[in-house]
Length: 349
Image 1 (tube, helix red, strand yellow):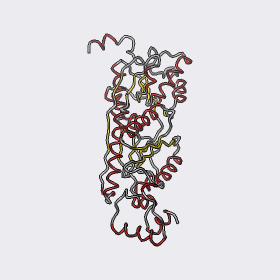
Image 2: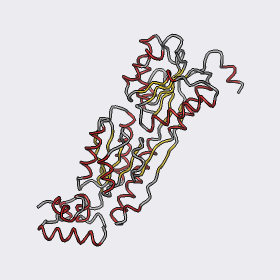
Image 3: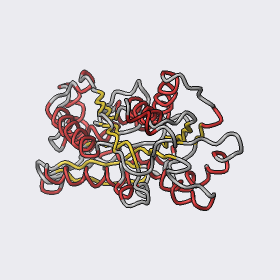
């Protein structure tokens, strides 16, 4: 007989039954009695600790959209390094940005009795199977993109609105009045907040926000390279662009020369993420730097606390979940410059 049979007879999830029998979860007395009765009735043999996970060690699954984007790769690397120092094993799973795959991975990890928590970096606002895992008591920490606001999870994000406002204001200070926004996929919280910051910065400076200068697309180099036919139309060309992802900005810088564009002489570019490759581009990329260490540190602090709470307290559903917001930092390099003729004015400010 299997652990699944025990869970079904006791009326609990397989994960709950597994963690209770391994001594990693306290449950209400009546729930414990149901599981114990089911074990006895079915004749299920409970594995000794030597056959299970290493005592004191936790296993956390980390779901990422991809590892081709250096931002996600750097976040995964930082999380695994910090986790190792805490005796936590991180298992990396790649969703490929597909909603169905995100959902399937969530179900897989929730049903695996060796997984103690999930660090979730998704690209979709909803995930029914993740919601069920949360309802069953599995600790979930969401990083970067917010998910269903009704979901009882801890969320760790950055101030995308404030960062976008800062980046756009910087371009305005350089004398640019026609500024494009090369944005991420519509519907994502990061995209919406960065767009809002961009628009408010223009409005507060008394500038017109031209909807034709806002382009949405995936966080890829290919999308960045494809934007120039739209940004170079006669009479419509901007002199600057705030780009919602460094990897998209990399594509723009790589394709600019093919379209007869010189950066920053013809087009100033400010990216977002602070990926390491931005320092090696020519020109070096001005960007909003993500607090990678801060995001990973907050995620590991939170997931460690939630695992401990879950193992020691049956009242998981009463725990208040927190939203942590970290700042973005503008790193000024060489991809953005003053509009010709405005330098003297800027020097007098």
